[in-house]
Image (cartoon, rainbow, N blue to C red):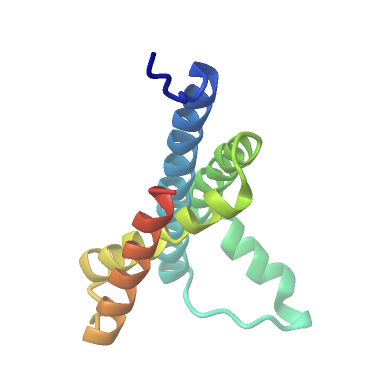
Length: 136
């Protein structure tokens, strides 16, 4: 009789849920960062000086983009913690670099930033590395 070693169903389910949690966390993190950037474009340049600290924090804290961006970012952190409760950090953490790919696309599409060939190639290499880790 040919016996195969199979992962327990619970283990597969735990891994699949963890991957969903990781992807939601990465997407929320990227979305939060995009909104934070948009908010800071509306707030304008800031300087962190003691005399202007409270007025600067008030300007930042009353920007709807910043507030919504922080809420989404924190929500992503909760999903990230749920993922970490299920899988090894050495497995989960490289997935966080998927946000580099999302940020590159968002920077180009939303903020009309110029993306150099070196930046693009570096980001693609990171994406390939995540693919390799996901296969382990």
